[in-house]
Image 1: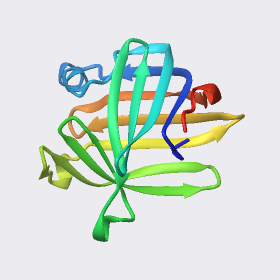
Image 2: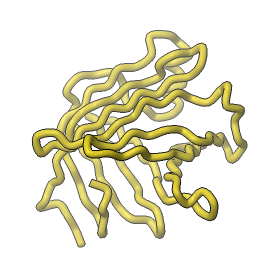
Image 3: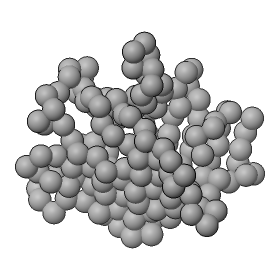
Length: 162
């Protein structure tokens, strides 16, 4: 799914649930997370921007863009993902069933956060019955879950541009 040469689109469906408390709802909105809903039409576009991969996720009418790239120097074994002012350094754990993501460091506006206030992340990707599946839950200590989104995608072969 991430072996991008040019622009690749994938489509499917996604469901989103958000925090049940005001602070979590506010944070989800500030981060551009989609509103809660079931079976959103989902389109994810993967494209290159220099040495980075840009993921543009559309769940219904909502658009969320993140930028992913390989870390540099001693962090070259990690994935860096940025969205808005937030930057995550992620360790990928892969096996025959898929990939799980683990947070190694968090920065907001370039400032490292203390581990005790890092967001929690439960994120997995895998392939099942010819579908690329994903499940992501993001939360914060004390606040609890901010957003959870999960779904399935298939590459739109005709949309691939070399």
